[in-house]
Length: 100
Image (cartoon, rainbow, N blue to C red; front, side, top):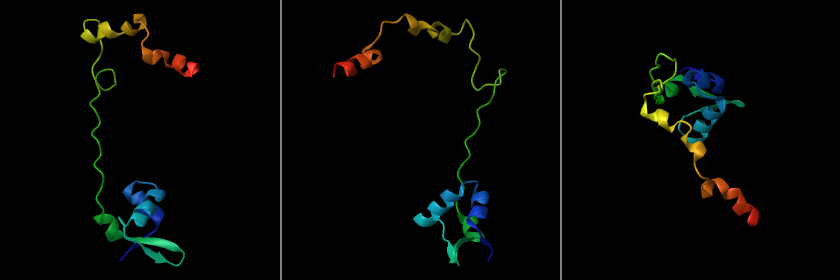
């Protein structure tokens, strides 16, 4: 039975030591008190489920996620279209607050 410190456990699970202490307090990770310190068994860490890593989006030619915006793209018509729009009530909310 191999015992790990909170720091070693955090490095194994790739989280902060505060997260490990929270897991212990919540009962999600069993731990033993050894003297003034807390130790976690390696078996308990290996049994703990790992979070699923999100997939990284494929990068295009520009090095950014998504597609390149060109002049024939329908979205191009939206670029700058909001600058000529009349103000809405949401944009003048500071006037309502000043009147209060």
